[in-house]
Length: 280
Length: 280
Image (cartoon, rainbow over all chains, first blue to last red):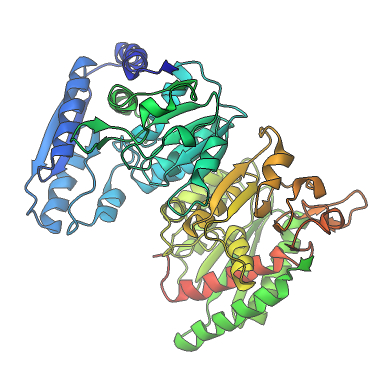
């Protein structure tokens, strides 16, 4: 089984970002990371994103707000960031606390700064197969892993486990645009193992630790693991039981070291593109 | 094979529309049908929609423009209709002539009047599984046919042939919301017959006359035909070769007399709901 490492894909994207930056003038693009509360997941993602932006020659600034901030106060603060000409692109760490209306924030978000594709305009573009906007970074990272490794997508049976707005649904659209025949599975799918075994490309985005084992993988499949979970011992693991698919999958991404590194690289590319006016 | 007739589904929706109208006050909701040019398809759809609105106790008005109207002039006219308080909902017959920017019209469209779900806000809602907006009528009509006939959707394998923005893609989202396991096929699908035979619900939305014959239908499948084409003799036909699936499909919609009548009924329901402020 070939292990598809995220670092190599990220390095390719870094070279691309540097070409974009060489051709652009003016200030270094700046990412605003907007966080409410101090969830360990968010803090860890934020650290990773800050490091990645720096490594890619970009700027990042964290905007942290207390979990007690009111809906109205947060919107006021968000509006300032959204309208700040110094801010090139925005990443809002989600989910926001329940008392803050996420939908309102999505609707307020300037599509040109919406690097993770949460605004209606960007969602509609992903749906239409229009690549002038920004797709959710994780969904796009899956396509990047496939392309960077020369894995054909057109005409392939792609099975996605999970129907979230951040991965499953937008990824279905992105893979459809690449001419894959896409099936989306979820908790209500009957015979999930059999459906998954039918996938030549299998994407695990269910958010359940080690949920997919060898029984779910067809011979020679390419397995992309989007999950980031803690196993029983608190160790980071994916949605795929990596050891159990050895000898079945032809290729697979590990967790950690797989899609995660590519997601922040895609975020960096979106930031560089936003500086050029993409998504507007 | 049970023939699923659109008229029966339409009658159920009519009763629903009448309940909505009884509970609403003020003016009768008015549909604006916006058409550029005189394409026979458009004129035929327009006549059908006008008749249906009337039969459902609603009003409809046609706004026809010459095919030579400029992009700027059409936008000005569209703006007036869009802002007219007498207009409850709008249906733009598409595709518009190539010199008119359809995307601009989609972006201009008031989401609360956008009965056929072409504005980014409504697309994003369909994508998110949020039923407070308007889905494209044809896609919703497919779900209506299934529900009105008591056909279970949850956990079923649904295969859609076609990935358009008016049927294939939004229908994938609507069926996913109903907990079907959805596969979307298209021109680049390898082994289309085999993939289609795997569907317990098979939706033909390819736009090719009689393209799907008995070879594409699994035993006991429910076949929904969205196609409206002319056969070699100029006679109306669907994407399914109806005779050839006899003895294979358990149920199927005919063309004419199937989904088409339901589509305009869904349009009428959207109009009645728009009067109540849905989609805003």
